[in-house]
Image (cartoon, rainbow, N blue to C red):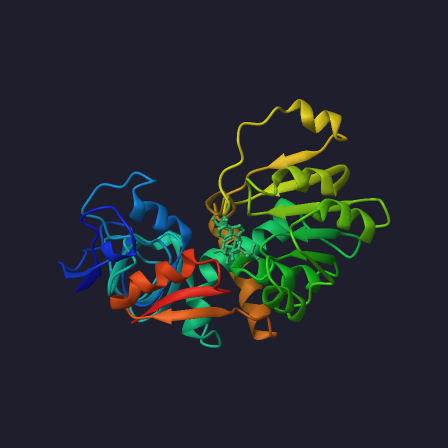
Length: 319
Ligand code: NDP
C-alpha cells in the first residue's frame, strides 16, 4: 500500500509517499481501508522532531474508513462496517490498524467527510462542553480560536445547551465565521478579559476554554469570575510556563484543568454516549466544517496550510 513515511525530520517536504507492506491486525485489532485521515498539529511537531518519534515513521492517529479484516478475538465489529477513530496507528496511509475498542461505528446518515472530521475535534468539543465544564442556559462561556475546528463545533454545542457564547478570533473573516456558527459575541484577543467583564456586567465568565495557551492563559484567568474555571486544552501559541498555584487563591479561588480527549473517551459507555449525541446533532444540522481536502501526495501542502493559521475547520486527506 501507499503511505507517508518520514525518514528524516524537517519541513513539510519530508512528507513523502512510499510503497510499504500492508499492516496486519493483531489480537483485538482491526484493519481499516482509509477513506479520510485527519491532519492535526501534533503531526507537525512529530515531523519537525519536537516530539520524539522513531524513524522511519508514518504519522497519524485520526482516521475513518471501512473495516476490511478482523484480528483474533474481535467480535464487536464486522467486516464492511464504517468506523472512525482518533486512536488509530499510522493513519497517513491507505490502510491502518486500530484497537477494536477504540473506534466508533458511523451511521449511514453521516458523510465520510463528517465522520473523518469528527473524531478529534468533534469529540473534544463534546467532552469540553458536556463533561469538563458542562454548560447550560445560565452559563457564559469564552472559547478561543472560535472559528477553528474544535471552536466551531464547541460554539454550536454550547448554543444547543442554551449558553451565552463569547468567541475569540484573530481576524474579521474568522469573526464572521464564529458569528455564523452562533457565537453571541466575538472579540479579538487583545484585552479580551476587560471586554468579557464589560459584556457580563462586571461579573466575568463562568468558564474559558483556552486552546491557545501561552499568549492567552493569563487573560483567561482574569476573564472568569469568582470560583470560575479555566479549561486549558491546547497550546497553539506555545505551552503555558510553570505556574504558581497561589495565583488561583489570590484571583478568587479559581479552577484550572488541563484535560485530554483520551481521558474522556475512556470507557465504552462514554465513547458510545458521545458518539450518539454527536451523530444526532449532525443529523439535526450541526455543521462539521472541512477546511481543505488533500490527496496523500499533497500531505505536505496540508501541513503548510495548517501551520499558516489561515485555515478554518478540519483538514482531511482523502483516499
Ligand atoms: P484550530 O482549527 O483551532 O487551529 C488552531 C487555531 O489556533 C488557529 O486557527 C488560530 O485561530 C489559533 N491560534 C492562536 N495562536 C496561534 C498561533 N500562534 N499559531 C497557530 N494558531 C494559533 O485547531 P484544532 O481545532 O484542531 O485544535 C485546537 C487546539 O486544541 C489545538 O491546540 C489542539 O492541540 C488542541 N486539542 C486538544 C485536545 C485535547 O483533548 N486536549 C484534543 C484536540 C485538540 P485564531 O487565528 O482565530 O486565533
